Image (tube, rainbow, N blue to C red; front, side, top):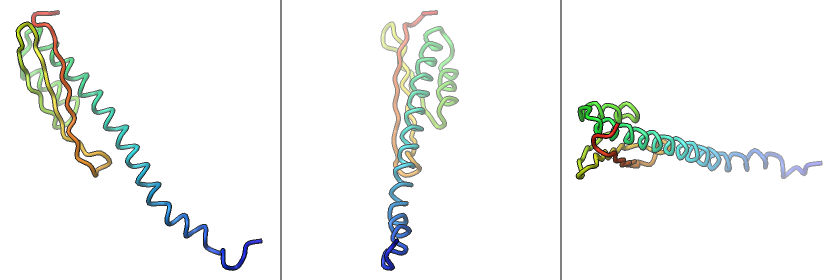
Length: 112
């Protein structure tokens, strides 16, 4: 049988713990979302590098990167036989923490 001075203790403890639980869940979801964006950005840079290496216009490669991750920017650089694409995008983790994602991928020029 609960004591009279324990009435409402569970509700008070829950009210104290709830913000920590919500923050932990939001940061976890934000981290998973950010990791997914990083994978999409890396994949888009690989596709863009292959496009430019095959002779497609630089604008098409930039569009591939921008379509994969919103507000992503692509820089195309030719390094001898290689065509390298570096992409970056600013994201917010859990709508709180700003973070810049970067990915680089290279392809052999003239490849199919």
